[in-house]
Image (cartoon, rainbow, N blue to C red; front, side, top):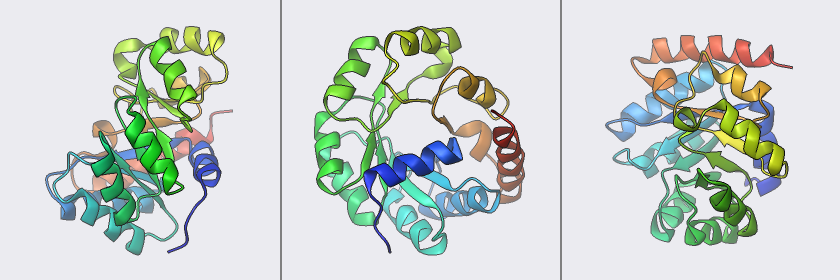
Length: 209
């Protein structure tokens, strides 16, 4: 498998404009959902570490979907970060600003997206070298919140997650987000449904200037 540089991963996420987040009851379910996302045209896939066997799902998706960029989500500590690296993850996402996750990911060349919900956390994330910042939970914070902090901190590349849906995703991009992270509203149900929603979302994202 070809390794990706941090900046290459970030460029791929920015180009795709969406990270499809998979949370499932098993590695097999997560792999199936990830394949459906890729088949639907969403090539950035995050497998949450709340999924049993998440590492196995990441390895399987790296092998089965060579054109996709596969990352690990809900990475809370160095142990989980290293497990993700070993599984072949190409980026790490965390709901918090955890210095050990950033250090571990960067040590092995992975882009890291820590989660933040205050200006102080965002500033800390950037000081620690965050490649992008996961605005979380964005649904509770709202579009106007992101617009306000983006005006004050234009250097922060935001990826709103948690409350972003297939319907409102374009609004977050129009408000200045680099990309969005979408989970349940996109990846619930059977593979056919996931692929159909992915196709519809990919078309909506292409229409955003």
